[in-house]
Length: 152
Image (cartoon, rainbow, N blue to C red; front, top):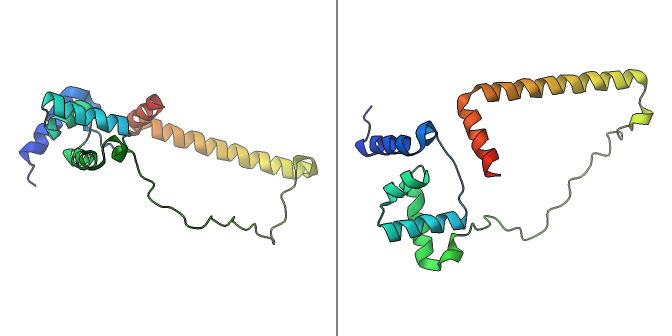
């Protein structure tokens, strides 16, 4: 397996700039303001797309080139995300199955049914707690989750 020297340099620069987080795969959508900031920095500071990627923690210059093309064609407005799919007709509401009986309210449940539901909900809760613990144990997903939560 041959490793491209430019790719290796990009990894090193990403690590130097952002630490281990700079090496983790990142799939992001950037807003128009961020894209404009990157393009302005490239223009004003004379950065290459590669250098801008390192500075702004973008995984590859292939993301920046389309932004430049869009900006040249339509200005800042062109950098805003487009709706990918327009519906010509409104969606039909999903049909409820008429054969399934309505779920009883809490007051209509028998004590046995209540205990069964309680057991089911406890099992579901335990499952979700275990899943969350496994996700937290994986350092890659824990870091990605922290980044997502810090953005919100």
